[in-house]
Amino acid sequence: MTFHQPPPPDHSPQGVGPLGAGAPTGPVLPARKGRRWLKYGAVALVSLFIGVGIGTSGGSAEPGEGTASAKAAPRPTVTVTQTAEAGTPKPAPTVTETETVTAQPKKTEKPGPAVAFSGEGEYLVGQDIKAGTYKTAGPENEFGCYWERAKDASGEFGSIIANNNLNGPGRVTLNNGEYFKTNRCQEWKRVG
Image 1 (cartoon, one colour):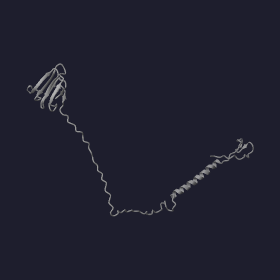
Image 2 (image 1 turned 135 degrees about the horizontal axis):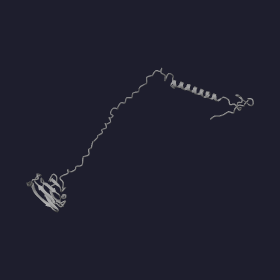
Image 3 (image 1 turned 45 degrees about the vertical axis):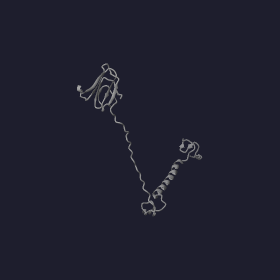
């Protein structure tokens, strides 16, 4: 907050200002503004010297403490020894047991021989298809459904046990170790 003092009375002759004739006449303000910085600057300078003095002394209340010339005094060391009372049982050690459990995979049956198969191909009974009686709905087209039971996969005429050409539904009984050949038939399904 700034307070202004009223200007001092003007004692100059009428029409003549402080700067001479022709200068504006009016109240002349004292040159106090220049002294204001001097006043605050002096306060700041004194504060600076006091702060520097406190800083170099380390702010210590005891003489010699905080200066480079002070000698470090040895500090006392306290050692506490704890002894167990006779007859006091020692605490039992804590034992943590960790057990690893591995999930066992579910037992699944191995896929065995099929009980239904395509009407086009050659199959080993007992390995590719299960032994038993199979049924088909008949031929896929007008050329008929051919099936053949054989002793081996040679394709020789002498290895044929039984065969047939179906124009409608049909059944055949297959035994383990036989070969079953089927052409142009609908799917075969085990029925017994």
